[in-house]
Length: 378
Image (cartoon, rainbow, N blue to C red; front, side, top):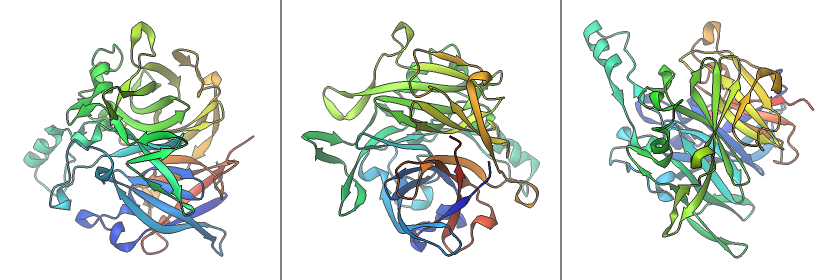
């Protein structure tokens, strides 16, 4: 796909700084446009970031600034609360955002992680690192937060009255070991074996979320099974005794609390999802720790499936390829977040894509980042 425009995302300097010399803008993992605002997440934090539309710059780039940060523990009951030292924060690893019916929805990766070897260290210590698998309790988060417009902008609320209905921040029942979804999947013939495998080893790893009416579509980066990617479809309801807790409805065969959809994406896993009318846009990339290829597909009718699905490549439109890090940028520019985009958030005919491990060419201004905008056919 040919990039036609870009969007400059400007972050507040003190909020852009993370621990260990990292910056917020270096690792964006999810994005959604709501009106004239962009909401983004970095997968190493426990916050969401709101950016508001400003003027188009001289080079034609759309500009978003007035950065505001929202700590998730102000609205949700995180299993692992932030410690006194922010350097030891246990990330939520937000990998998907979407908006529907007054709620901003978010999902964590639900994945395990394997320690990364250090090229400068000894063989013995690296062998120990590579053998260590850990579980971050905040990653098991599937939640919604009311989003309301006040004074021309959008803010999160823990609880709000809207159209004679009470909206509450709530999350799928769980703890720091898992939640009702992972519990249900321990009996699944396809996915159960992968729950104990780290995400970047083709283990269970959520990296996409799209909401269509009452249904949530959850894209899996892994596992990819014999070249087939997986989307889970769920529907949530409030607990009768606690409106801040959500339960899974039994929507699948044999009263399973989910449906499975397997798609032939040429061996790629899912990095993000977007609802486009009755269709589902899919940002796809490698399930393992590779740079590319990265492709945008469209599953026709994917937002309104009739039961579980096996979707062959002949039923999926290839919309185009997305650039990824090569040459000097090897190991950088991993496309991870995608949202339907238009300057004012209506009648979107493009997608905006954000990247993890952003290349230097995207860091054109201090505390800012350039995201890409690609036109959609039809």
